[in-house]
Amino acid sequence: MTKLLGEFLVDSGKLTREQLTNALERQVTMGGRLGTNLVEMGILSQNELTEFLGRKLGIPCAFAEDLKGIPLDVVNLIPTDLAERHHLIPFRKDRKVLSVAMRDPTDLEAVSVVSFRTGCVVKTHVASESHVQLALERYYNVPRSLRYISVPPSPAGRAREVQEPETRGEKPEERGKTDPDTLRVALERVKKDLAYATCREEVIASLMNVLSSVFDRLFFFVAKKQAISGWIGMAPGLPRDKITQLEIPSGEPSTLNDVTKSLEVFQGSLADNEGNRRFMAMVGGHFPQEALVVPLVIKNQPVAVLYGDNLHSRLPMTLAPFVKLLAEKAAMALEVLVLRQKILDQ
Image (cartoon, one colour):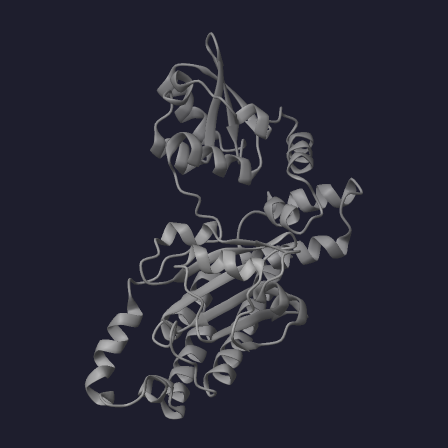
């Protein structure tokens, strides 16, 4: 379906071949559906995407307005597990006809199950992935999981507990977790993980696993055209579902925006500007003594941004080159995934 949608948009003159290639590559690295990536790239609006999906499939569309104020008795016709599993929202009932918004209205199994469970004739409507996700959260309390992966709980704490007996009495910045030999061993391990990664989640998880023992606060952001959005991370006392709520508009002064524009590594004190203040307020309210911000770059375009700090202590100078090299290796691994997908698409 994804490739056919791209070809349909190209044939309609809405998309160039180069834009389609860029969007497919971004889809591999950032996940989500092709349409979602086209919206995030600023090529299509949500409504334009929905309209094109409807034209392509020859069925009615469900827009954001259609999914507002849905009566509770209509929502309750479909249980949460069914709505979440098939990415669908019932939004209108007229006698025995139930209108359902679906991310994939060609999912005949879902249509059959809904018809059986409700005793209604199901009238399918196509909706964008984003609108369906928002509605699932609003009516079924299903947290939005787009651009989010989970990692083992508190690995940084476990790593420090193991290292403490060997490093007692040393200054924090001199502890073994950042000495050259330790970093060299960690790099070799991560390189092997990245070489055999089969999806973007494995790429990012491998970085999280090693860097969580180095930083007290660690975040990955998705670099989108309109904003930098929270993807995954860890910080003392920060609920994980709050990470995806972190968002810095692209025009707002912030260190994260500076790094995505310059594609250069930043290490130092964060400037006291609007974007940095809002970011710090969401992750605990404390500006760190020093932070490290590193872009993940593919074909000279930022696809993600890594942020790390140790709150009240400075970061060793050996850390920035190490993290920069990790980011470069991760970008290579993502490019390999893109090439694999291109092979499968031919």
